[in-house]
Image (cartoon, rainbow, N blue to C red; front, side, top):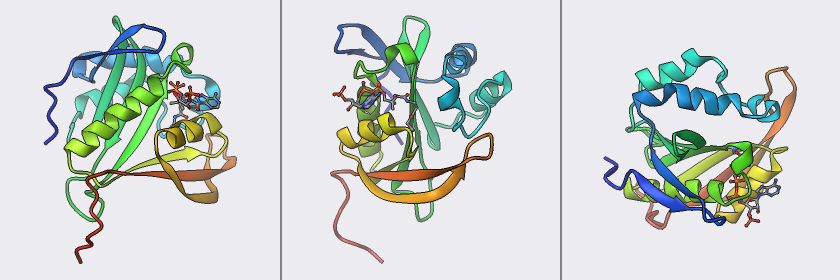
Amino acid sequence: MIDLDRYPREIALRSGVMLVFRPMTRDDVDRLWIFFQQVPPEDKMFFRQDVSRREVVQHWADTLDYGLVLPILALDGVRVVGDATLHRQRTGWKQRVGVVRVQIAPDFRHLGLGTAMVRELRHLGEKSALHHLMAEVIEEQSAAVRAFEKMGFVRAATYRNFVNDQKGGLHNLVVLLYRMSTASDDLHY
Ligand SMILES: CC(C)(COP(=O)(O)OP(=O)(O)OC[C@H]1O[C@@H](n2cnc3c(N)ncnc32)[C@H](O)[C@@H]1OP(=O)(O)O)[C@@H](O)C(=O)NCCC(=O)NCCS
């Protein structure tokens, strides 16, 4: 069980701007949907779901389960400017692996927010005894690959022509891993 008492949490960007981090709630549908409408088409192309449809965001809100998907929002006042999610499995062979996804509003990029949000997910991962965090990024999204590498993630694999965009074009998928300090070298079979 992740301890969410630390929220809402105020953070300062390099520029001095203050933002608030907190988990998404059912009341956030419209502000999150507005946030996704600002995502540039080149980023939207690689989304798993069509986030320009309000009902997609509504469905997330209706089925919120922080134990499986924990969405952390970055808010500038009432505006969502960043969304970072930690995806987990409660049982089975991947229960020690968390998958992270991050999306920052175009006008809030290069300010250290992506780094701060991944750091937040790293903290949550440690608190929930995860051993590894995994990020999957399209190779062309070089800013994302660089951002994760700067935060200690290591390129673990590149799958060639592995995923398709919404127009059917194929792209290389880069898998990056971050090994938590809680990960033990002792293997238990
Ligand atoms: C990738 C992303 C999350 C980075 O967020 P950000 O807030 O701009 O990142 P930061 O400001 O913390 O920058 C972190 C590092 O990434 C690198 N970086 C960021 N933008 C970059 C760019 N356009 N080109 C190259 N490197 C870049 C830099 O090394 C930077 O460190 P520095 O500022 O100390 O030089 C953001 O660009 C984004 O939302 N992209 C679209 C979605 C996406 O690709 N998500 C990742 C897949 S889950």
